[in-house]
Amino acid sequence: MNQMMEQRNRKLFSPYAQGAELEPGQFPELYNISAAFTFQFLPYPINPKSPEFVYLDHDPLREEAPRDWEGIGNIIQWNTAWESAELRYQVFHRRLPKRWKWLKKFSNHNVYLLPGGNRYSYGAYRPLYHLLPRQTLERFGMPLLKKGIWPYTITDWYPEAPIQADFRTRLSNAFAHHIWPLIDSGSKQSAFSDTDSLRLLAHNLDFWLPYAYKVAEQRLRTFKRIACESKKQAKLLQKVQSRMPPGAIADRPRQGGVIWMGEEDAWAASKELIQAADGKGSLRGIIDAIRSNRVEDDFSNRWSYAREIRRSPVFHAVVN
Image (cartoon, helix red, strand yellow):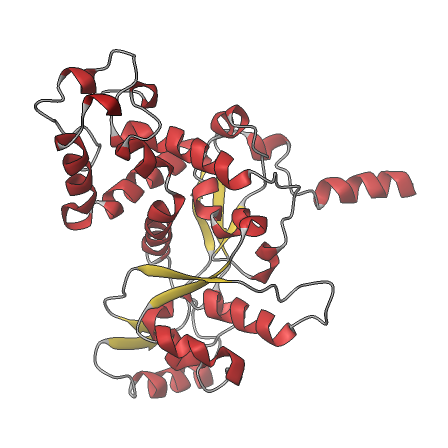
């Protein structure tokens, strides 16, 4: 009996996707837990700014010292209040201890707190990882992990599964392979040298991460808000709303749920990521500039359509 229970618990708490979780209709998946578990109300900017990141160089869960529970709480609450965007500092500044006052530097930015260092690569780049289908992950020797929770809380700082020392490099290669057809539909990556600017762009996880966050935010903003639990709470909400400054509103947090699930939906989210990156023609301009300035050394020895037409560049990215 004990052995059966142990096997059941191992399967239940395993970080790896198993059985139906690996079906194309369910894998990959990114999920959100509602901020209503933490907050009654939150302020929201009417026109939120784009996501930015602060990578923390310390580990509040370090085993060689007492756990920094205060720091853990700050990180969890700060990221959970994702919809407050650049208003987060106004929400938290009175409750932050002195050693966290440095966040004032980012009081006008939509900042997320992410773990720094290679040890936490999975935690930092989770939305990009969970866009990748099973076939791509297996091709690059990456673990098939269960659905990811967004945004990151402190539990993501400790890898839930054995993560390779070169996890970030593997993810960079896997993500570039995944996103390439949306960047250049006319030629494969192998048509270009390893130092080609377009290949470097495809591999740059830090370039794509803000847009993955933006896609997650945009999708979650279509979710309904949690209803008030009582007349007293509804009355209090009205009072809070009456005090909001111009450009901001206050309301109940949104419901949580699936941000994307399954290969088809993750591919649709990947296209949305490209569209987000091309806001006001930004990505299109970068790619056009790269193609306009290519030289012979940018290509591999293989024939490619891109090499054939390099004298008159054409934009092939799927940007609708």
